[in-house]
Image 1: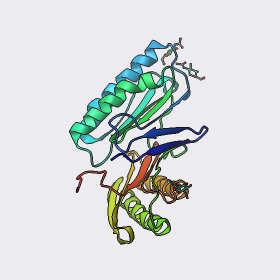
Image 2 (image 1 turned 90 degrees about the vertical axis):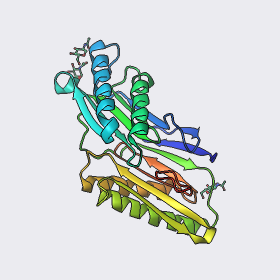
Image 3 (image 1 turned 120 degrees about the vertical axis):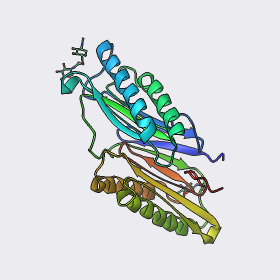
Image 4 (image 1 turned 180 degrees about the vertical axis):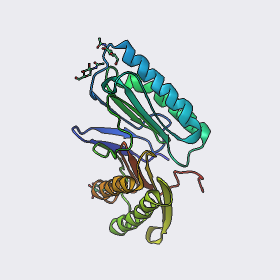
Amino acid sequence: MTSKYHDLLLSFSLSLLFSSCFSAGPIAHYCGKGLNDTNGNTTLSNDISYVLADLVARASAGGFAISSYGGVRSEKVYGLAQCRGDVDARDCSACLADAARRLPATCPGEGDARVWYDYCFARYEVGVDFAGAADFGLATILVNTQNATNPEAFDAAAGTVMGRAAARAGGAGAGFGTEEERFDAIDVTIYGLAQCTRDLQPLMCAQCLSSAVGMLREYCRFRQGCQVLYSSCIARYEIYPFYFPLDI
Ligand SMILES: *[C@@H]1O[C@H](CO)[C@@H](O)[C@H](O)[C@H]1NC(C)=O
Ligand SMILES: *[C@@H]1O[C@H](CO)[C@@H](O)[C@H](O)[C@H]1NC(C)=O
Ligand SMILES: *[C@@H]1O[C@H](CO)[C@@H](O)[C@H](O)[C@H]1NC(C)=O
């Protein structure tokens, strides 16, 4: 699969990147100051390392973990790691290990660091206990540059698929949902995936995914594939199978 993507980072800044449709490496990252910079502070660097190691150890098997370490709240390091719900423990573990290795170097000296992969997501922040809060202020949108033929009808069909995937994730799927459906007009199957981080209550998960699916509608008009990456949830559709089991 060689379809081209470009990537929009929407928040305070806008950036344009390219990536292929599957990548073992990071597909997006965000660095921010957070409450405090960590610049040159070895205590904080050590606390970050501790939290990342703890996240890798505990999330590798179960697919999700939160962790914190350090002094008083304003100086404590808070972390979260999660794998995509369909990814097995081996791929999950490899992805998280890579994320933990890269994250401090990706955002040197910064108090807020987040990285997204196809298979996992990891973040830490100094002084902010973000777990449980729906965070959809920062969006990265990866857009397939190919448009669908019969685009209006395709968008409607993709919207239906994503609505169902989101409903499953926000309900019985406990934070994770996939959905696939034939779109006979152009002889393709549309595959959709929606996932929230597991610290979210169902209502917050539904709110996050509702926003993500809205972003897909707004920014991915006519596109054959697209994904919205928030810190608390992700939504993606493609016309090829991209989640396991791969029925190809
Ligand atoms: C972080 O910032 C707070 C408020 O500005 C300050 O009181 C605290 O000492 C800072 N901590 C570090 C580790 O710099
Ligand atoms: C470094 O961070 C630690 C723990 O967060 C804090 O207590 C200490 O004051 C910081 N040191 C400096 C020089 O900012
Ligand atoms: C695809 O559709 C978008 C949205 O209507 C349009 O801006 C873009 O130019 C189209 N791209 C191609 C390759 O046709």
